[in-house]
Amino acid sequence: MIAVRARFLSTLVLTLGVPSIFLGATAPTASADTEIIDATEVIDAQEVIDAETIPAVADYGDGCVLYPDDKAATLDSLRFRCSAQQQDAIFRAAPLGDVPSGVKSGWVTRPPVMQAVAPPLWIGKTFYTGPDGGYLMNRLTGAGIEGWRADVYAAPALTDGQPAWALNYAPSPTPPVYDEIREVTPGVWFGYSWWRGAFQTTLLLTFALA
Image (cartoon, rainbow, N blue to C red):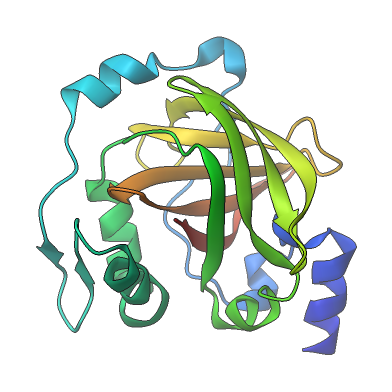
């Protein structure tokens, strides 16, 4: 635990830059030669949003249930009741949804070791966005200090090629970090944090925002 915590701090919390080989994170498929999409290749986000709707109550079994009218219950499912496989299915089934805007709280949903380490160090993100994206700043420590900027835009997801909101940390001190999220119920986003290495793309963790 000490080694994990030290590595976690060394990449400044929100990047949570510990390869999943240390953490036991269960990763969805992402090709080793998958290319990170930059802002010149973005999807027309509004067209995608207009064509999609967030589904009604979705029961994935064993208490993993998404409630469109209950953020707290949905977050409880994502954090404590949904397995890694169920989380991946939720992401695949979700539309792009709206881009987050303003202050959002954040929670790591897997792997368990990072769920325990993250709360004192990372509490969410603040989005400075319009309908098609913008940028974000992470909220660090309990004081919510802003740091680690990421560009926000719609792009194909690394896992399935369908639209997702890309959170690209190219402007930050850790440019290999690349997140992607979808709105799984109104006002709740779920997604992945990846480390884009020289030889492969590694899942660092999954997280939820609301």
